[in-house]
Image 1: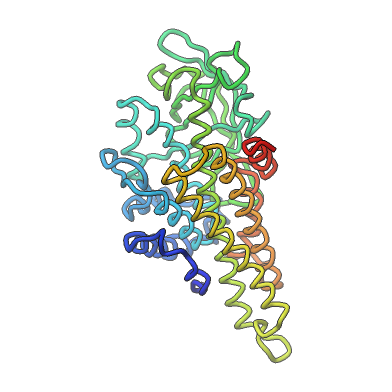
Image 2: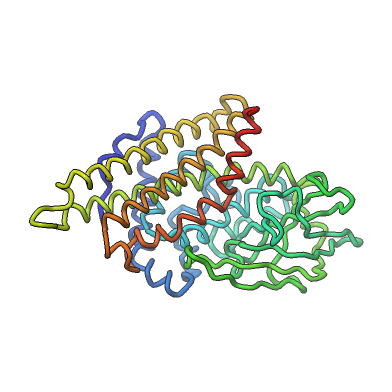
Amino acid sequence: MSTPNRLTALRNPCYYSPEHETFRQTVRSFAIREIAPHADQWDEEGGFPVALYRAASRAGLLGLGFPEEYGGTPCDLFFRLILSEELARGGSGGVCASLMSHTIGSPPILAAGSAAMKQRVLPAVLAGEKISALAITEPSGGSDVAGLKTTAIRDGDHFVVNGSKTFITSGMRADYYTVAVRTNPADRGAGGVSLLLIERDTPGFSRTALKKMGWWASDTATLHFDNCRVPAANLIGEENQGFPIVMRNFNAERIGMAAGAYGFAQVCLEDALAWARERKTFGAPLAERQVIRHKLVDMAIRIDTTRSLLEDLAWRVENEAGDPKVLVAQLSMLKVHAMQAMQFCADQAVQILGGMGFMRGTRVERIYREVKVNMIGGGSEEIMKDLAARQLGF
């Protein structure tokens, strides 16, 4: 495995304390020790052992941003960005996606769930004993949350849920699903959307596994709800008030995805650089060829601009500095830029590695396959650009 390059020294030290850097080393060690040696096997097997959740919890990785009373660790946004960036060193986006699915499944519970729900769900999830997933996307649409069709009709002290969700990370193995539903069928827009906590053993709830281009180690599923009776106590927040919670969750997810893309782009540069220094053509290392050095610099340019955008925006989100609409626009633009940087770096790394880059078992081959899900998931590039345009008044 390659070692970090000098580009990492360009991080702005104003954003990072000694505690941040200590945590960085903890996450990096975890990724190198617990994920990297098994990434190829888990990719081929289509999953990883559930024991990894407990190992991640013991390392202090699952509870970031959650209160201590639930087994969490309060922290600023930079700790969470470090987590996403350094987990990328394991070389498997699929492992990262499922291992951290609680970071999109559980925040709505923390933000709007009842005290009893939070106490019942969060400690087990943060201890790595239970798995949390988010279910928003439907076969008929993804980012158009206001147009979702899965219904939850009140019947006494229960909701009766019918419909389906798809492309759900941790969809097969999760214990708790935070599900967006329509509780007011008369309101076909955002005003009729609510969030429900649905548990895996609910009668009428079934799942179908999906096969993907990448993220093979992450189980992904379509969820089916057939007259599922869900206790009204499982309502997350107020009825018909779920849409704003989903939007806030999306914003947090997108900056986390951008940090992960930045991390994977760095991995591509590091592996390409290591190969270029070792591989000889016509008697000289590839790294001595100007055309290869230029490719490496082109990768470095995209990585460094992504880092600059990411750190600046993280600071302003953390400090609530700036017009909220502009922040949403910049989060959208950051996601687009970070994913394009990852795409470019993965492509160039495979090209530099040549035939070896096309072989299964290299990090850059896997990352190349995983690029597209990052450009689509959490809001596609097209949706992100349109959202940014609206927020900026274009």
